[in-house]
Amino acid sequence: MFLVILALSLAILFKGDLAPYRSMFMDRMNHGTWVEKMDPMSEYIIHHSGPNDKILAWGGQLGINFLSRRNTLDAYYEYPLYVSSPFTQTITEQFYNDLSQNSPLYIIDCAPDAPGDIPPLNLSPKTNLELEAAGYPQFPANYPQVNGFIGHNYHLETKIGAYKIYRQNP
Image 1 (cartoon, one colour):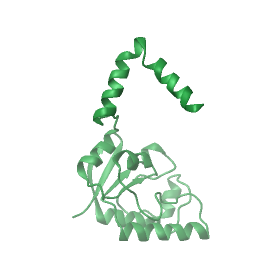
Image 2: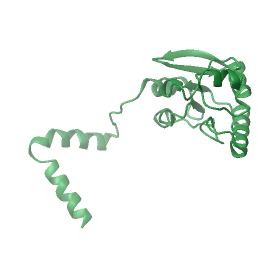
Image 3: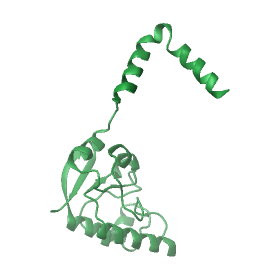
Image 4: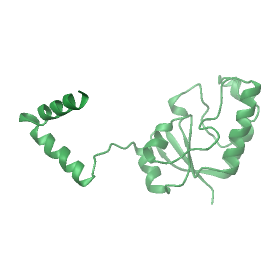
């Protein structure tokens, strides 16, 4: 039944005023070319990295990874910033180990998407007290270590809009 409805729908769609769309659709199907909207950050990553390079979107914007077809860290895609607990301590340690052992080529600072919730990367170690004084939520104990690692091993390569893109040092 589904196939009958689909066939009728396609027949109606590709008749009359929609004929030009049929032509375009069939052309794309036959030649394998599709029109694709790409955000500027993903486009930058595609042109400046290889398919096996990893990308970390600081702040958890996985759409960048998806559109650029680049993987993120293996353990966790996002640094767990919110609640201090024994579980959080374990996953923050795993995040740091993965970050330091399988470092991504690029780290994109997506903090502008969540002002007040995610601190922007400033590449200088900050203490949890400094972050709490600035109004950010409670952070895991190893946040200064994570931020210090990024600051020591990455440099600002470019800015696209409000986003900073950091590249791993050679």
